[in-house]
Image (tube, rainbow, N blue to C red; front, side, top):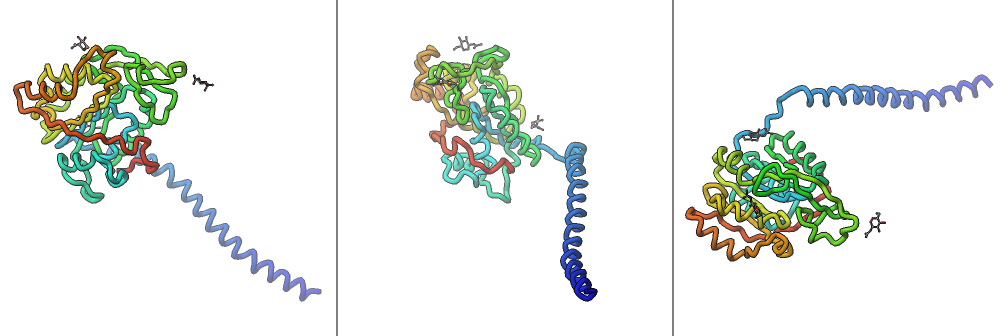
Length: 286
Ligand SMILES: *[C@@H]1O[C@H](CO)[C@@H](O)[C@H](O)[C@H]1NC(C)=O
Ligand SMILES: *[C@@H]1O[C@H](CO)[C@@H](O)[C@H](O)[C@H]1NC(C)=O
Ligand SMILES: *[C@@H]1O[C@H](CO)[C@@H](O)[C@H](O)[C@H]1NC(C)=O
């Protein structure tokens, strides 16, 4: 009897002891985890060690950011293989690899649709944490500042095609959402915020769902589409918006008028890069 009990005890100890050991190690380890998590986030909040680049050697202006994919293509091109815009970024800002990053390019993105701002501010924060100078503005790009305009936005949130100051492109008008958004005089912004930085090159994308028929004449009148201000730009002209905007401007006319400004004109880059519209699943992490 006694012997059998002894053996049972031994067997129980043999099983229990390693279990207790493993449990002990696990408890200590998880306690340490709990200790370090708040410490880490505290450090992030307290220390101003994150230095966002102030020296904008190059500038990218993203008018009509939508989900921010084009700005991500600038900083994380390896996530967007084959995207047609990337060779133009490389040409103007220099080639990028994971080891030689684009910390010398400052980006300013404008998006009128408030629905995209959560995502855009998330990208902004992630990049700034890495020292990249990226800012998104929730404004409708226009020829004057501080005007309240209505932005029409589709119910299909994911890409939200054609959200802008016109509801022409929105099929589902019953369920569309209307937002009130402030305009920004983009020429004034460029002249007061970008030009003083004296960047080596400025690249601009204009994809603003019809507002180009307000902005382009304003840019031409103020000699903004000149190489000393904008090195090169890519534009999408939205034919469907022309009529309601009371404009007849064609791409060819734009090209002619750019040459008539009496300056060395900005280069028009002909590329239509609508790739990766839904963005990639990988989180922004430069
Ligand atoms: C980005 O650079 C501009 C120009 O130097 C500067 O005014 C701005 O404060 C910078 N942004 C951040 C977030 O530091
Ligand atoms: C509008 O949205 C509601 C609720 O999601 C839906 O039931 C309805 O069918 C939509 N109407 C149209 C015209 O799409
Ligand atoms: C802005 O553009 C609109 C539409 O072309 C025009 O009617 C208006 O006069 C312009 N305003 C300024 C300040 O240029």
